Amino acid sequence: MYQLLTDSACDLPLATLKEKQVGIVSFHFTVGEQELTDDMGATYELEDFYAQIKSGVMPTTAQINIAEYAAFFRPYVAAGTPIAYIGFSSGLSGSLNSARQARELLLEEFPDATIAIVDTLGASAGEGRMVLEAIRLRDSGATLAELTAWFDANALRLQSWFTVDSLDYLYHGGRVSRTAATLGTLLNIKPLLDVDPAGHLRMVGKIHSRKKSLQALADHLLAALPSDPTQPLLIATSGDWDAANFVKDRILAQAPTANIQVGPIGLTIASHTGFGCVAAFVMGAKDRQ
Image (cartoon, rainbow, N blue to C red; front, top):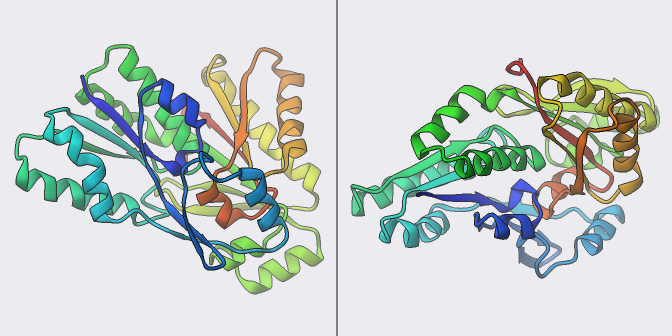
């Protein structure tokens, strides 16, 4: 058997990861002069963090470095346990490249080790959605080779949709220009974003109201749902629970048996979205374009 591993940007419930015996490595973030570890809410209250970013505090984040990955992988490798790390999109962070470099370092010491590095090309609960697929495959008896082959064939079926209430944090993170952020605020434009095939965030729509942007998320999930009507639909938010539940209710109005899970956007991703981001994730029938 092999060990599944992921990182704190997957935004799945910590209890779920522990129950499913998935190991976790943490990103880091800084609020003011305080350097903290994204331990998925174990020691830091998410609602307190949301209140800070709602007030305009802009945290910074730091990726997981090579040494941290090597230390994370080492106990499994030393014990002879094959590992599969299901990681944050390489299109949004250099963290996955650090994991690959840690793998090469460990293989010099343990040449017979099996270390699979899987790029989910996803973020937040989109990455988490792929972790759920890895758990499903493992629990159904798939070998590690079968698991990695499934990801090679299916990773791009993941659809990720986001909208934010304020463009300030996307501007701060270099995702939109100052002009776009200023005009968007003045004109009450709410961006619709997705993740492209290379794992990069891109703007795909500009919508003239918060309610319509949330409806767009629901519409995209409903359009993809027929590919697997029983699959988990993940909705995540950085503190705007009313908005997240609005999306959920719109879906249930047309698909009453949909398996919808609503949860928080974690510290790492919320640092870049600001308060009020709502995101939706689903596996589609075809690769995203």
